[in-house]
Image 1 (cartoon, rainbow, N blue to C red):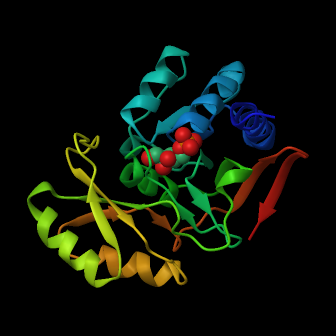
Image 2 (tube, rainbow, N blue to C red):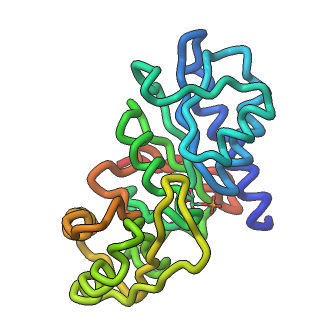
Length: 223
Ligand SMILES: O=C[C@H](O)[C@H](O)[C@H](O)COP(=O)(O)O
């Protein structure tokens, strides 16, 4: 199977997983990226069954609206039953690296507000130790130099993601060469640097379930 076929399989599995949760007042949190896009397309087949969604990016909101699925402002909903999103890497504890598409801050906010976080990925994303994928860090633009120097002190090699402005009007540093042995501690340390908005480690609030597409079928991994 190709990577695209694996992504399609996991998108379908995610919809099957959340179907029993869908009621007329259910709000679904929707992530960002190529896997999340396929999930949106599958979710659209069931749009009459639930109330609507909260999106983690402008791009996902636009795709949802094109399908005729209601998209709510996060501040106008009481709760999100389930959040479905992709990842750039996951370890066995379902700690994630996210933000390859620069949506990490809104993703982390929606994940924090959700009762259950279902991560969807193909098997290439499962790793023993996080950090082969450069860790995205969203920063306030004027703090770029300061944050970069602090990230070097933590052992990383930050690279400015040229030309990218997040939905929040900020910039991204991608941090290379981190061997992330303690994701919870590193997430906290990076968040403590003045000028950092969010970092792409989802460790304190990890996924609850990982649906992992493999050539032998979609596997369900839990913490
Ligand atoms: O900012 C983007 C997100 O964190 C994505 O969920 C992540 O990059 C995975 O994207 P994809 O499904 O395209 O590999």
